[in-house]
Image (cartoon, rainbow, N blue to C red; front, side):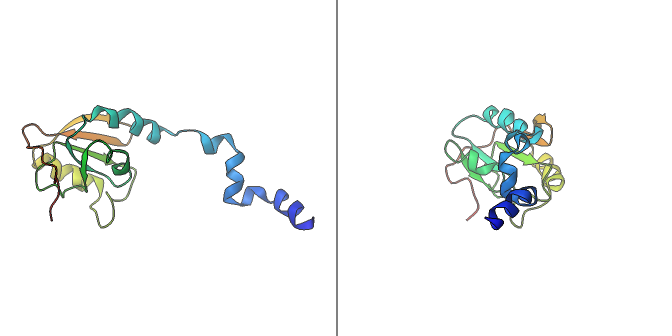
Length: 130
């Protein structure tokens, strides 16, 4: 009983204690931006995606890491709130600059989420460098 009472008194110190707060369940601006930007990407295209958003696209698009599509991607989505674009990935600012050099243009920006598009690239189901 003492253990349970102690845990209840200290519940705010434990991460699971946050489950009971409204703030835990609220969608922040970044999450709302992701929810607004990703539907703008058409189905069945090659997308270079930041690791935080790639899983949400894999059911409908060909997805690869940023900078790894072998110039087949027609869309790119970046999260500027992250230090990099994924495991061993470049920072978003560097990926953005490289994307502009590769012919991408900014298509939409919501909060820290940036969607880029490139006209004329081929859609290939491989969409990655081997």
